[in-house]
Amino acid sequence: MALDRIMDIAGSGLSAQLVRMNTTASNIANSGVVAGSEAEAFRGKRAVFQTILDQTAVRNAMQAVGGVRVDRVVDDVRPLQEMYSPGHPQANELGYVWGSNVNEVEEMIEMLDASRGYQNNVEVIKTSKDLMMRTLEIAKA
Amino acid sequence: MSTIKDYFGLNEQALQLRNTRLELLSQNIANAATPNYRARDLDFAAAMRRAGSQVNLTATAGNHMRQSPLQTNIASGAVVFRVPLNPSVDNNTVEIGVEQAKFGRAAAEYQASLQFLENRISGLRKALRGE
Image (cartoon, rainbow over all chains, first blue to last red; front, side):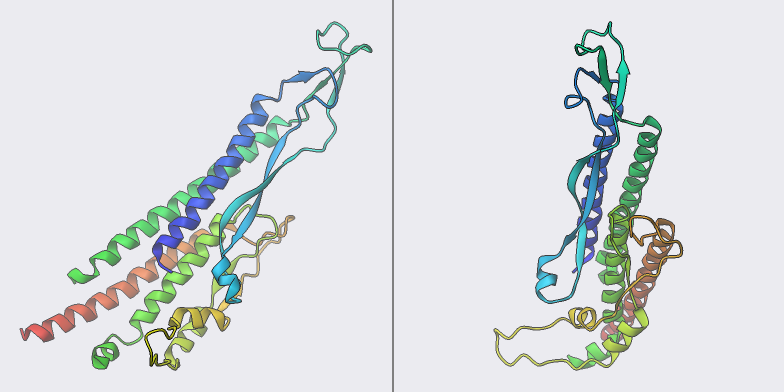
């Protein structure tokens, strides 16, 4: 129960936002991937966050929560782009290829949101570090 | 010993409560993108009132557990849920602008409590030195 707990919480926020940024980067990088079947086609990925419950607090019925972590990464279920392109080397016998269902505009927004979330947590760490240093100097008063 | 404790008064508890508040707000900021997360805050006035009227349990043996004043306060329900200004689709009630403003203010309040405590310490030191 001290200022270092704040650092742990904000640190978990940093790593969760990093996973989110990673999935976004992967989505953007793979947005142009084309596959010869629906099953092989690239589907956009999304990180789902979950609150970490503080176990000792749960035992004391205090309902306290801790930081955040990535619960799972889910696939985007929206339909894929089906394109008729008989000359494509990966086309199936009917001449179809499947492109990814990644929406680049959405990914850019997701990236901005993740980076803002990251910055917020960095500010929290900075502030609590300053307060910690000041508290250490209390004896000099 | 108890006179020195009386001299510090509620400043010590106040600093601890300020720290708890900062912790809750940092949790809100970390969980700004978590679905179904409910933003929480400390009802500072209620917590302080409890800290003021607290009965201290005496430990008569070495292995008796001491309950910190902070734990009692949280357990007795000074933590409240925030009512969002604008509800969101994923049931998350964190509004990052509000949380940032509150965090900044809570950090300033922490520094204020620290300053009060520092003043008390320097006063005590002066009295001890007999300057």
